[in-house]
Image: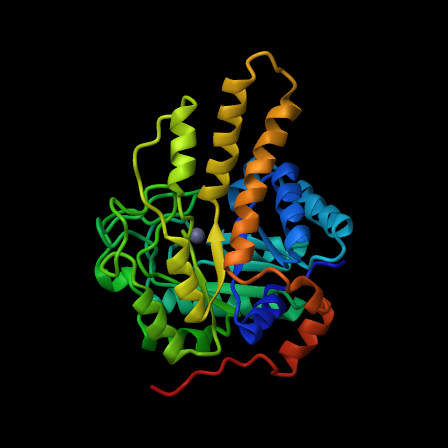
Length: 357
Ligand SMILES: [Zn+2]
């Protein structure tokens, strides 16, 4: 099966009322594990790569080749290949021209990936990139608001993206009216919003309530923008069981809290269609490797370690496909080529619809 665009996948998710986890990958093994789960659950898939993966770890040729091979190996599961957090025009345009079917133009930060930008800068760069991507049929995710903790006012860096300095509450919670204006001007296909989640493992110092994780903000944005696909970043759940596994087998991970899966399920009711998950996958794989190493001191074949970690990742991924309602939808999606998508953009079929305030 050919790769599909984010727009096609999220339109389907919105029509059927489900969310799609977007898993970060940097290698073949993560890709195979995620696709094994997708096959078992009959789920469509979003695989995303960070700029660090593209530029410093695997390289574009490798990532694009892996994902295209996966598309052939798992012909019944539509896959979208998405660039996570591009901070420049070139990051997004080069992704699309390398074979990605979607990119995130994160103009909430300047090109250094650290300094919060102004609203007009964000509108300007995002609308330019979205126009270019749409000429090719690829999709664009924008971001309004800055990801960071409502507890500390600080963000953490993950894979080269993360604000520095103190952020105020206005930056940390996306404003619904501004979101409506932003989507109308930039014509993004999906909008990442800030609601108190942040990247990495240390999201909350306690079980989150609505003061520090504002699902109500998502609800307010969805009421203003009912047709816009919302994206939750930093949405790993940092499961207690994985923290315990890591620590039991030689790791040293301080107690922390992530976004409960039940809160993500609430978000999906309020228009969240893409849920970014990276930390949980890292924890599942590295925890399982630690456990395997400790329990099997005589084994030195690296494949055994990796296979054990893939099995743990598969469990996590299948759970998210089931809980987000993604399972059972792969066969209902009939891939639309990027050329066809480009025609639809040109015809004005995807003009953003904004509900009056
Ligand atoms: Zn993110």
